[in-house]
Image (cartoon, rainbow, N blue to C red):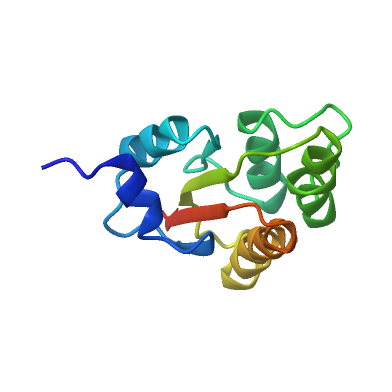
Length: 137
């Protein structure tokens, strides 16, 4: 049986950055749409380096042209840029197949995911849900 979208998000804390595990991307997208939240999706399987990961996130999340393709710029785009755009309904973010390559190693993956943890904290302080789900390639 399909899980009702309200139940799907209700089962996840409003500030969460976690492995996607049993969640299905279409269900998360449907839950975001049904609850009026932003759905941000990035498929990263073809990226090999930090620059490529950040470039693909920027393109797939429709970041502004001035996005700097570094971890600070990623955090800024996930927080200040969106905050300045006005009232936000909440976020469901999916990072699909984050690469595990020599040039995007465990330490870099941690820094990358930490940007989303920090963004979740930023939105949490403002009472806005920010749920991020990731999978590794």
